[in-house]
Structure formats: C-alpha cells, structure tokens
Image 1 (cartoon, one colour):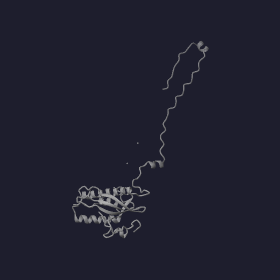
Image 2: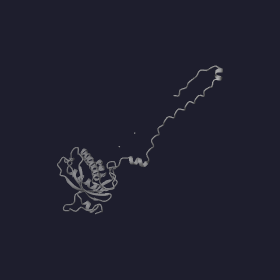
Image 3: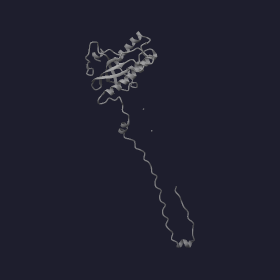
Image 4: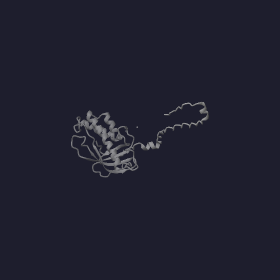
Length: 226
C-alpha cells in the first residue's frame, strides 16, 4: 500500500384389433361360387411417438444461467459499485452482530472482516477494535442487535481496470445507540481473491478506506500507485 493510502484514517455480504368369423356353405355352392378375395386387414397405423426434446448445446445452457450481478462489467458504473458496497455493508453488519452477541472481537468476526479487507487495512481494523474494547469493555456504543450500516456511494473518483476509488457516505446510526454524524469517506477497492468467498460473493477487496489527513484536500491517484 502506498504512503498516501496508509495515512488515511482507518474507519471503523438458487423440472384393438378386432377379428370376424363367417359360417360354412354346401360344397357345390362353394365350388360354383366365386369366393371373394378377402381384403387384407389394414395394418394399424403406427402410434405416434413424441421425440424427447434435445438437450441444448453447452453454449445455450450457459446463456440460460442467471447472470452474476458481481461480474466485472466492461464499464463500471455507479449501480454496479453500489451493489458491491451493499455487500460490504451486509458483511460488516454480520461482524458487528457477532461482536455484540459475544461481547468481544471473535475469530468469526475477524473472518468476516477478512472477506472484505485486504491484509493491511484488516490489521489496522484489528488494532482499532482492540483499542475500542479496552476503552469500553461493555461496548456501550453498540446496539444489542446492530443493523447494517449504510454505505451510500457519493462519487466515483477513479476507475482503472481492477481498481476503483470512490467517496461514500457512511452512516453508523443503524448499528449504534449513540447518535452519529454522517461521515463522507474515501474507499479504494481492488480485484483480489477474498479469503472467505462464501461471505463475499464479489471479486473486490477494500485496499484502504478513511479520510484525508487534516489539512489535505487533494486526493492521491491510488489506482496508479500514487
């Protein structure tokens, strides 16, 4: 992670066949008579058989499968990014509910955070939680059953292939008992394999997040290693 990114303040996811008989006659009559030739019994028409529908070709089957809503589109737009943010918010909510229920930062909560945070920001997150619990062991700020916090996209700042930098509004009030101000924060996310794909169905991880250092207004170009 670049120096600028590390200086950000870290802020704490199916389917009758019928037969007939005739009577006999006198032999003379039979001899004199012209015996009609019996017409052949017509063969019964073959029963119509329904052909089993042929299976679609492999490419047709693939086209019938539902689209992955998190597959990276040719052009990343605001709707797509918001879907990813909604997953991050849901996973964060699951972690907060785990912490609230246990009263501590558990391995289960850490696994959830690890599914959305790259290693650097995950380590910062662990440190923040350690300090928070040491200062407030009862976690008095946290609701007993926290709801998902809101991550609402405000602005896309940088798009460069598998890298997105954005500004979003972070609302902690659904999870906290204390009244919280809305925070406008920066988030840098990259395409990277998640440690827990079952929790995070997107291909994205948060590389850094937070706010600019005090007194700075220029946003660094994080996608280009700035």
